[in-house]
Image (cartoon, rainbow, N blue to C red; front, side):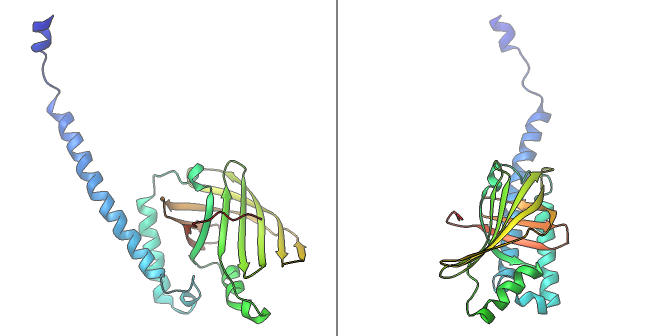
Length: 209
């Protein structure tokens, strides 16, 4: 038995080559991912959450191309698991309604603060939130369903405009879906049913109603 073990042939060289290729491809993938991520974040860093991009078609095209590069990196990843549950803070978007509220808040004697998406996958909820410091907030409640490894279906259920000592309920107004085309421990990149784009990061706090 001992002689038989000693005489056993070594693993086929082909297996060792595959492992070597895997280590090489993985080591090359990480820097490429970081470069693409840094390029996107650099492009949106001076865009005031998307307000400036509305008037700069060349900049928008560059940002969308950077988003598509991130989508290619994240193509086979699952982005709708428990790690999607978080308070996400807006960095950049093309979503006109959000940008309108951010831009026009001054007309009402206030300013837009944090713009957030608060997602709880297990509870099946999503809140879209715009804060107006020090006490104001507008938020839209939604129910969500996970429909694929990257797609989330949502249905608005109610909306509230709230001040320090008052609250105005508003009717729900729509449904749709969005796809998280890339997500890591820091940021999430999404495209939605209307062709709008969203880049958010994980906020260092948890928002509560």
